Image 1 (cartoon, rainbow, N blue to C red):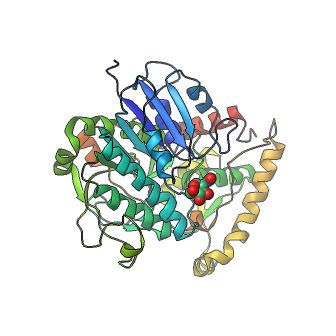
Image 2: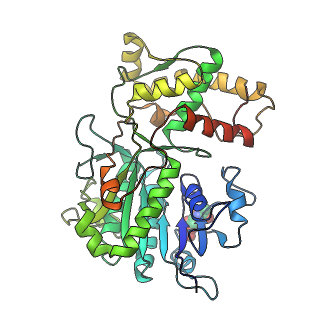
Image 3: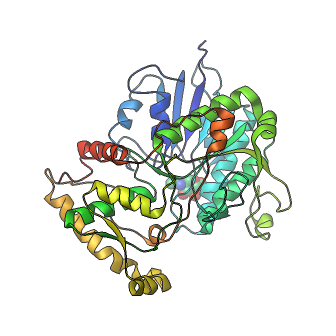
Amino acid sequence: MSSKPSAIIFGGLNTCSRAVAALLVPLEGEPLVSHLRIVDKYSVNPPTTYIGAEFPNILKKDNVEYRQANLTVPTNVASCFDPPEGQEPYSYVFDLTGEILWDRPEKVQITNTFGISRLLGLEAARRKVKAYVRVQHPYYECKEKGKHDEKEDVKPDGIAGTWWHETLRMLASIEDLNLVILRKAMVYGPYTDCGIVIRFIAVAATYGFQKQPMKGLWSPGKYPSHVVHIDDVAGAAWALAEWMAKVGRKEADSIAGEEIIFHNEKSKVQEVEGMVPADKKCIAPLFNLEDDSNVTMVDLGNIITSFFGTTFEFFGFMTNALVKFNLSDSVEEINETHVTAWTQMITQADPPVVNTPFTAYMDLYHLKKHTIALNADKIKNVIGYKLRRPNINHETIKEVIDKLRAEGTWPNI
Ligand SMILES: *[C@@H]1O[C@H](CO)[C@@H](O)[C@H](O)[C@H]1NC(C)=O
């Protein structure tokens, strides 16, 4: 029997799970796990979502298995935990499930985010998995000032944020679950098509292409817009799994337990199966993750636009006031020049880009002001985690763009 753990990654093909897979079973070098199963709703062959150029090669490895499954169905969830013939039960579960589209109705959030994670958490507890790592995206409005640590009561952002947060309370309430929560800042990195940063990069590229300064909306932009490299999301998820397997939930709660505060409507408790009453105290080990850059919106704008040979400014007071007053009416107008320029870029590129998930279109959610600050001292102090990519800079952006150009999804212009 192998002494290495085995692992399942659920969901997140469209967010961070490909990076976790690449860490667990690297293309070159020793795998960290004896066996890896990846489960999501998408087909990977042919792909029905963007999966990047590297991931198909990881799927070809002997000890990696991909399974397409509808995880809203309880029997599907249970069978995903059955190990392959002759193997021990899975040791680690990485839960990267959840609906990431911000404009889905509440019902969809309840089924796809809360509901799926609940089935996974209950089954993982039943099977006594040694570590269950839940990855939480920054669907919060943080305060501009403050410590931004895990004790701070951050407010979930919108319907998606509310149900992603509720999911943490529900998981926390499963006593026998070896749960640890990784709450990350805005992610960026190679082959990462989700989130705000990559859109921002695409828009900055269009301004560079047009040799115009990029204009931001939220002057003076001094609010935190903290980021984290995807390699660190993977690295931290692994480090937390290893830690949890050693200490177990009870000790983990006593070392790193935080209260997950109720932020929902009390009336929902009766309506949604498995929801934890508002007055029940839910404690779980929770760790923030962000890089050391501590960037504000202006810093991020400066770093990214200068990479594309342009500058970052803000709209004048009048435009700003008008747009802020009614952002949803301005979305199409704001996007017109971005989208036109991006289309020119991908058609004039050599070779032309025929198929790409990347876009300079910023929808309402991506245009809004998002204050994200999640102090990551705790994971460094308690787990001893060391950031692999401590700063966002020209080098880390270059790596992203070079890899996308090489796979033909980013204009070479
Ligand atoms: C998954 O299963 C549920 C419940 O049977 C069903 O309503 C839903 O349409 C299925 N989703 C897909 C993508 O097939």
